[in-house]
Image (cartoon, rainbow, N blue to C red; front, side, top):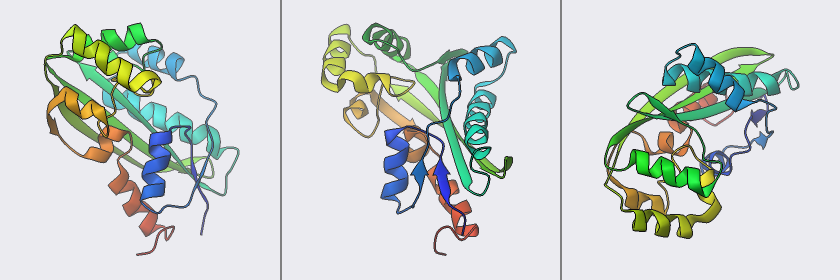
Amino acid sequence: MPELILASGSETRMKMLLGAGVAFKSIKPAVDEDAIKQALLAEGAKPRDIADALADMKARSVSYLHPGALVLGSDQVISKDGVLFSKARSRKEAKETLRALSGGTHELVSAAVIYEGGEAIWRALDSVKLTMRPLSDEFIESYLDTIGDAALWSAGAYQLEGVGAQLFTRVDGDFFTVLGLPLLPVLDYLRRREVLAV
């Protein structure tokens, strides 16, 4: 049975796979996500295509170094009213993101791609619509005080699995997708490849 490698340094994705009983090792890919994202945006790429391309490039870069393994790459993007949101690089940017998402509905797209021997052999895309309640500046400041650097870990400056749940009034879609990986389709593929028991 082939080894599974997660092409990511994301603690959330690692916790999801571990929690589901999946044996894997993690390797952070050498990919300039910002440069790729900016190039795709300049070409007018849709959020779904950007998420897929980023997941693909992560998996491909690690697969070339480990051709005998199944390499899982994943990425997520958030968009609202035609604007794509990236991970905040500072508290100030996190605050701006939350203000922009406040009181409206945004779409989150998660993509997963599996490579083997330098070739893409499987991919999945899933999207979720999240409605954020109107947030006061005072609440945003308090929220950012509570979560600290975790605000910089995800594109929307929130983690739905924690106190970030307080930001929302409605979530339409799969919980795992919001966390950054369409986990159930990944598990289904791993069963078909006999990486997991049937």
